[in-house]
Image (cartoon, rainbow, N blue to C red; front, side, top):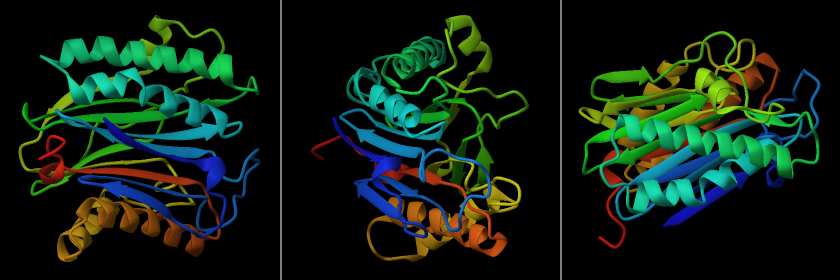
Length: 272
């Protein structure tokens, strides 16, 4: 399995977008397009990751609160055994089996935040997706208000949008039952889907980001299709991050932005 991780603590330049891409996977991270207007501990507390292997690809974003540790620990944990299993040898990974595995991974990540975080208030949102081309499915999970979109010929559709009381990872003494109630886990068909897009709420927060995030994803998808650079996932990822930063500059109110994209036709088995 090959993977990449962008950590907020390493990307603190206001207005800059840092990105990494390989094959059909890309991630981008920014401190934001304008200064934050709320109290915060670190300039950039978000993180983004991707991984791809013989059977598929994985992408995730996390929006840290109370410091950068929680988002970083959560994604580092997921890039270990869970992402390796899901992208290298998923077997018959149906919705029920994935729900059990996703909940176990979420619970272990929350416990890791408790063990490894230096600050008891550290917590994070988490959204991730597993693309399995052979099965024609995408499996997804989220806790918190970060987004997961399917984008393609049928438009842009948000998977499991957040509601009220969405919660975080890293709360004291988590239980599997508590996290199960908070988690939004599911699967969807890849029919008509060109890209999977994940983003933290720096894209959409009221008074900070864009008013209609699905429209911003659609615009970024059109841009990626029109560019002949041969790296559509990267073009889509950077365009969406830049769109968020432009909205923040207009409103003179900033927030961290993490984006991850998987371009379905480019996610092929490793070595092919």
